[in-house]
Image (cartoon, rainbow, N blue to C red; front, side):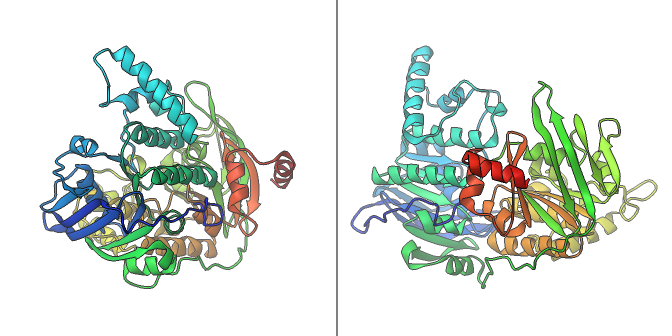
Length: 533
């Protein structure tokens, strides 16, 4: 996460005399008994950047989905530039000059970048002419905003960071006058975040209105003109950014004081529990996604991995957890060597005392059609506590899930509710509770607070530090640079499947880490870092 020192300094424009680009009046939306938005009023002046913050389930995504036409409000009115506007679907929103960059990408995997951007925005009957015109315009946008991406690449083959650029380019290509961005910096380095904010500042100066949904309060403070805080479906406060601070915003979001900084003592490393030696993972095309990686983690320490998504972090977690096979090299887990000649699957890795919180909770962490109780024992379902000789033990499973929900504040506390019906943050808390409850000796954790609200982040961080202090060895992978810097005792930086540097958590700074993440550290500094590693 970029901080206020590295982010470009933004000039806050005077906008009181400008007509509101967006005016939402009395917007309400319910899903069954759940009141997602409750009589929401929101005014966003033209040519400003307006932040919206709130806990998971506060209603901010629903509100923006109404503005973009994914949902229709049960009641209330939408005014765009002073004109009452009916938005029934995203086509209506686009016609009204609204664009949206989603947190979860809205891309067709097997389309090229160019095809994805053009999809639904073809400009003429002769498709070849449309393609040529689109390519010319996109190349201009790439040059202007520094958002370079191979237009002919197949989207699913791109790293996550580049897929995010495709989404941003798609919105810019459609010429939106109002741009909604949902957690846009999660896959960016600090330098890329600075570049994005320069883009947003340029758009703002040209009269474009930007709504920024983010949980990164430093970014709210650095880039926005105004911020609205939502809680339980209502806007509970509006602030000029220049007249507030992170601590006040956090308190308004959760209704209590929140400690933003992590309190932890110095580590006390003990025995080596995970020793990785030249670990390599090669894909089906013969490409080394993980390239001769070596490091170790001792009991009582947290080792963080920093890097832009798609640089081998996922393959590292999946190899160490038994999901992907090892191609070359090895790792020793609690005294047991794992390599190509002695492979271990995920169940065997778990039996060796290693738990895994996957980066992608929907693909690897739970089954959406399972209820919460069933998801709460995934990977542990053969345990005699839950599984009898013939049938499972539903009461034991339900009680286990209820305990997890209580200990990690999973909402709603309903073990019978389908996993898909929980918010992303509550899905994440359920998975974390499942993997952390029994205090494994080694914990592999990917993106522990992705989609989790600030109050729960505070809790999760405390649990991770407590596990370290109780003697667990923890490997932390996160795109949140603040999170890695705050939690990790040592930080390894990955680029293109390799470890390109190591720094201690105490000595880490965003500028150096960001340069290492882009493999752009000046040569004398790079040699120094390589010598330390």
